[in-house]
Image (cartoon, rainbow, N blue to C red; front, top):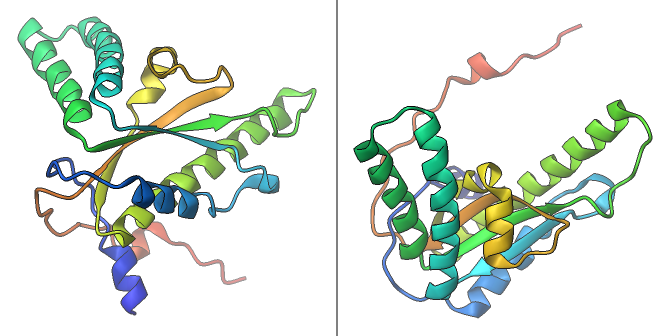
Length: 201
């Protein structure tokens, strides 16, 4: 039960102390993340680690421009748009470590028909997501916390250009990692009977 309690203790944290996270710690976290299961064992995940303030600022600015344009299309007021954009920029710039999780389809199987091609892509997405969860649990094992954000899905080209990523690296998620500066409350979970169906016959 101790290990189950550890797994259940993971929380999403968005505020961090400015303690530096050693490179050796990041390497251990990423190594553990790569032990996630993957379709055909192709390991389609790719990780971009961003620690330097200049790179974080470049990423934040690139994503902020896309975010602002999206919010304006949603007919939000200028004040609301500016507030949300600045919050997004601040989260990136204030995070001790930003890790952008990408997916690379170049080693996955290729099919001539759309049905199997779509299934293969979904397998790569699921595999990459599994590595993301493993990353968060590995950070927890190091006494750190983090939060999984999906902003890169809305601005993949901006993220790729800001970080000079390979064209085959498709941004999927972004993790903020660090020493927590807040204590999250208890997590409210749906009852198990609401999310599980056991087939009897």
